Image (cartoon, rainbow, N blue to C red):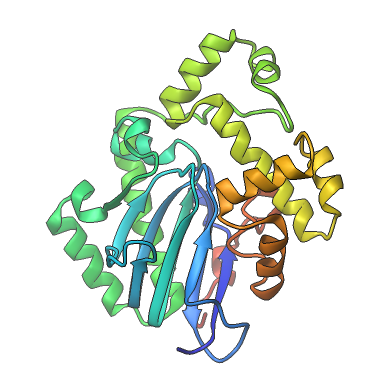
Length: 284
């Protein structure tokens, strides 16, 4: 398999309220080789993934995955196996966007992957797949995927306007979050679960992981990271890392060093700024 490289791109300005970033994995001779099996940490984001060529499988079951797939937030890590020089585009959707787009309960997406065909129908999926097959560059792939997303956003907006879910204060407890809202803890539980499919406690757990991943990539000592991010001690942080990433903190740090920090660093502070569409040319 050729060396592969993953780039993290900002969305177009029109999609910025709904899309956190676009991850583009392409085979090529430049850049560090990504592993054949890659582990992805627990995450609060939704995702639309397009396999343009090659193969990708669930590394645990060995089952092939759909070439056009939607996935919801996860409370556990996931492992993917790549083969035959894959080219993959993944749109990372902001929390709550996936269930809003398709008018589905948020809980129906947690820990779930669904073929796009199951959600938008065979005819629309086949038409999108044909357009993507004819695209001749990475930029054309990204543009077509964004056009499909903009169509879904227009349809969803015709039903109900998008409003972002409640945001958790950095480093907060559930009580801190409720008081900042200001709601009772029961109101917070109901509103967050309805919008995101996750409890406030689960949401904060993953947010704390993301904060610790940023500091881990900056080389901070593990004991300092544990203290700053609200873990009881380094052993507590290590248990959480194994549960949410499948690796120890030291293992994640090694993987970051080898593979430019992806897919570990997805906190807002790590993502690229607003994109100027004219600068993202068809030569990409």
